[in-house]
Amino acid sequence: MALNVHTDKSVLGVDWAKIETVLLDMDGTLLDLRFDTEFWTEIVPTTYAQKEGIGLEAARAYLNPIHARETGHLNWYCLDFWSEVVGFDIAQLKQAHAAKISWRPEAENFLRKLRASHCEVILITNAHPDTLRIKLQQIQLEPWLDKIFTSHSFSAPKEYQTFWQKLQAASAFEPQRTLFIDDSESVLASAEHYGVAHLITLRQPDSSQSKRTQTQYPAVLHFDELFEGLPNCDK
Ligand SMILES: [Mg+2]
Image (cartoon, rainbow, N blue to C red; front, side, top):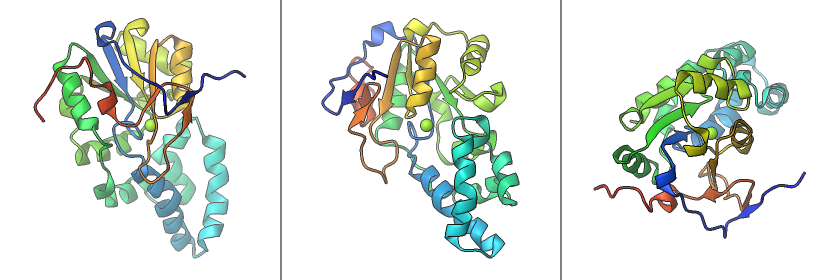
């Protein structure tokens, strides 16, 4: 399959006059994916191992195939599903570690500029409602957003066309005049299939991981690369 490959030398600009709706992902886009990576790859397996009285490798050997099987489906994001799998309350564990949730660089400034612009700004996330609640308690996202939708309320993740059809029904948008930013390229491919015309991904969704040097979609390291053409706001 031929892919559009964007290297870190790509020059990227948004013609903001052509955009009326900005759709934003949460984890790995506005917020540092580092929290989620540590939670799912360290904290959950360690807690499960302690509960079962088994080693960490045995815990991972149980959990990793389930992760792999559910990737791209709603269960992968579903705290109720994972609480069943491990036999303890995942939301409670997440709440206990919530202090580690943090912004990505320049994300809050980007939201401030978007708020002052002509664009409607909508958060669309695959996060479970409990995850969303915990994150919104920790990080002041809501003042900058016109609307928030979690795919759980549509019973379909962003990877599915059903999500986009239900989003359109819930909050009409013109795909040709919509910009969507998401760290997941499979999610961006789903949006592209639906007809969303302006798509951007992130070079470093997780500050604990190295930067992506090649992406399938145009990418930014930090949002300040998109500031040109947006209103100037005092910090
Ligand atoms: Mg994401």
